[in-house]
Length: 70
Picture (cartoon, rainbow, N blue to C red):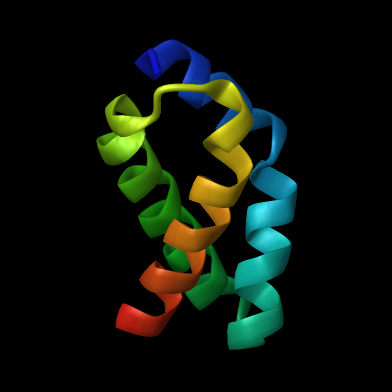
């Protein structure tokens, strides 16, 4: 997947990613940090995706893995 397309999809879902982070950390500052980490990891790995249809599952798996690793 192209970086620009991944960035657009992330931008469209930024509120959802932040809500995910906030629901797990309960602290706005920490949730913002986790959201930034998730966005960075998705953008770093987006080139591996072959289809746009796989993006959302990919994004949520990275979100969960990033949360677990932090």
